Figure 1 (tube, one colour):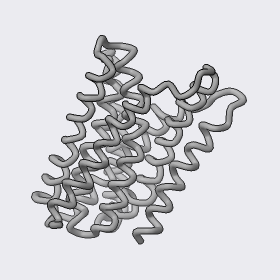
Figure 2 (cartoon, one colour):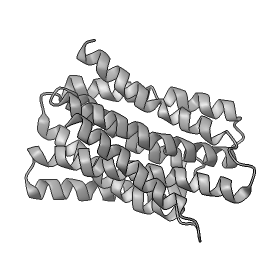
Figure 3 (tube, helix red, strand yellow):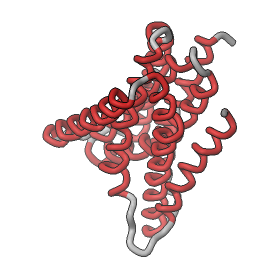
Length: 237
């Protein structure tokens, strides 16, 4: 399998976690409301843990290698402000697809970075693909719930739309590999920019949805999400 084929496969599989998350959201797991509620909060927390592991174990460590301290700090901060700006714009637009837009804002730059990083360190690209999939699963879950409540789309139509959106991953990944592979500083910049934005999203969008009074499964879900990222890091390092 060539490098290009590997990138296409990795980004496609990580992107297919989006419709998979939507399919899981379409399944009613528990009959009792409190169990269903705790399950959903647990899925959200799991995604938060996976996002934090992507920031802590891949995006920041790989990103700072090629850049100065000042450049790293500026790019990381700009990423947070950029995601905040998107958040504000979506809030004012009152769109029914804010979760979907937030998900794509994560997915596309990460896939771009994955494709570019593959030429430098295939193992870190493989780990990044796993972490992207882990975060896309609950984000697809949340976006499905949002569209289901605020649009007239059928469940099947939403899942089909999400399946087509998964194709954006290979497009971004191949673009990064072809055009950015010879520019490691640009790759590092994208990683740190994405990391800042993801960290903003975790504390702005994910963490506030997690708490439930006298329920502890959601919080431990975040631990499991980060743990899986840590295991993947250890296996590939």
